[in-house]
Image 1 (cartoon, rainbow, N blue to C red):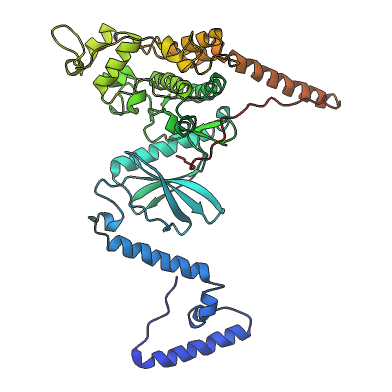
Image 2: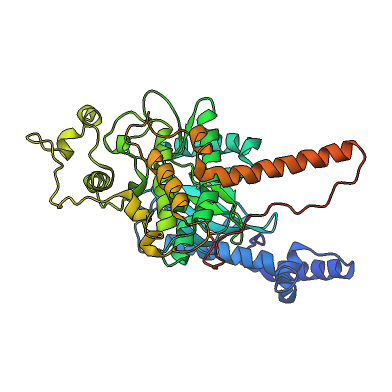
Length: 454
């Protein structure tokens, strides 16, 4: 909101009178002036109410920052760790009005905001301040823009709208999507979704991972988990992958050592061995079991806890991998090679967790269509091949697309492609295409949790 020019006290009444006269003349001519905005309160509170409100709100947010009891960094815009201090209702770049915080992580804060230019809600990722986070933010922008230009991804990666610098923070503006897959699991009361829906999610995620691997150089997401996969529409099964804040291009020298959320962290990352795109396929295997069972497959509280969980369900890690690890002495005893843990090791099988022969997890799918023992056998084999300890033995994306577990979707895709070819041939021949119903996919349950995004 612009301010009236200041005048000496002795001439202020005359200036006000002159302003009032000018404003009246402007009003008589059917026009508006800056003076009228202040001299006529009715105009300020009606025609110019939004301008007035924004000016007041801007001053109020600034007042709160300067008078906060918390330690002030970056002029009151940052906390001690360099995270942006969000003020509800503040306007960023004179365009985006902050509405709520959607999430906060090691790389920054994500907020829901309203874009006044396009009159739509968006998700803004405000990275932490500092050179490291600035460079990582630039890398995220570079990767997402390249993926957005890949037609093969068919809208499977979140769309980036705008990038700018705000108060020494790099800000990424994304489309606002529906809720994430963890929220979906929560809506099932942690009982998990059907095998059919799990299959649809697996198919789409493999399409993303295949494109990441085929890129030159290959791209590693480094943080694939249910929270980073969002539904495009809460009533459909279409998804988009978000949060490439940890992503990197594959190289012989790993860019990061601490990557992947613990529940989905691969053995080679825990052991600090060289890693490649196969770590994302390990995360995918963990995710798929969690989506169907309803709880995390490896819910370790520490990395040693994770190794114990791996061993109990999948058997001991290969001696060759353990022997090459710089963290070997931290995790394993030098005397007998056993894990350094106070937990009593028990042994289970992945088949029991999934419920291959017992009607699904806890018998909850017994008798349901699409949950017979043969289908569960395909699912078990599919996941076990994704959870191979040795990255070189882990199932590739191309192998996964040929697996029997995904066969029902491949048949539907082939039918859809044939339908398109038939219509194109009919159009070329000048014939009216035969009416047919398009293949549709049923979506997940229809809960209404809070929206979330990148």
